[in-house]
Length: 124
Image (cartoon, rainbow, N blue to C red; front, side, top):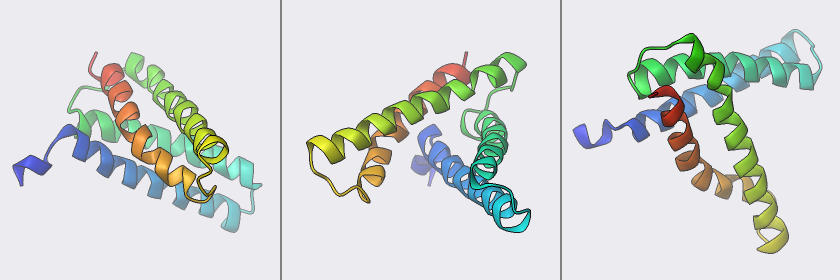
């Protein structure tokens, strides 16, 4: 069981929880509060980003959260969005992968990249 207790495993768990947080907030804002889907998306993203920061500092990397780290943390998501968007384009346009499958394939590559970038920011 100790082999499963790694930073990367904890990072994947936090990512799953964070995805659930985002989606729950999105659904609440969009379907119950009747906010526009894009407003709901942004609210969900911001709330899940804050939750993700604290889960990653305390649980994944076991470091002390600081204001500087909190302000730098959104950079991890910029990397994630940039890499995943590029990969989806390459998979669909150049490798002719089904557009419904391409985002799932991109996750396989973005998880390690985001893990490294997040670790560098939070472990400073």
